[in-house]
Length: 369
Image (cartoon, rainbow, N blue to C red):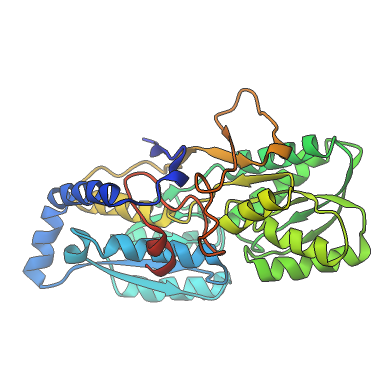
């Protein structure tokens, strides 16, 4: 059974009072599902303990991901039934493996994992499953067959980004590509997809790659370094921020490039106000909160999904200058508009869309937890 839901247009749903009320009603309904496990918890005097194992906390997306999980865990019925523990390890397989081994010895009910590797953590995860621990993996997912995967279709999204860029630059010119977080599963998938698509165009030249780490500061520094050697770059595919690209090119005295990047309020605002051709792909930071809710449904006696990949019917966002239609796919093109799908008064670090499904997360939830 594949887990699926539609968050088309959800960037418009920054939680109103009515929306939050509806969500709370939905979450109260989940209390019945938690009854059997709650009875066990009451008998022992303990709540169900759920761990989040996160291997990297160095960018706004990861911080907002953790905040979203905290916000949901603090609401009924989870505030009465769940003890949430978030553990951040260093961005290495060795560090996250050691951290997970410590978590497994504590025998929690479940572990949510944002993974440092698609395969290297599998033996440790299999040991967790053998110990009766429910494991869900999200964002950067791993492939252990006992773990439920909750993620996007990274390859399809990355291919569309590269196809968009090729069309906007008229299939010619120098481009640079972002490797994202080195070694992270989705980052590896994305950089390979970018390269695979763009190498089909003989007049497009990939003149460099950079490691943005999903953070605007490192991205600005790395792109600035590339511009010192390559002055004719016309396009960038980023796993982070088009706003960083604009700054780097402006400081170098160069015309802004066509840019495809993560959907953030600051990048959208920069692209619109600076007349850049841009493409924004949504990579929702609330995916961990969604995985948390699905795990609790299973722990309360609901069915375990097969090794499922969560699918999103997605919008992608473009400026007027960068409109390119992809015929025959499931993606929906939306033009960037202030106050509708990006928010000029929002903090620059805000990742969009803020909420999805029935989560009802607010800007404050994303930024503060």
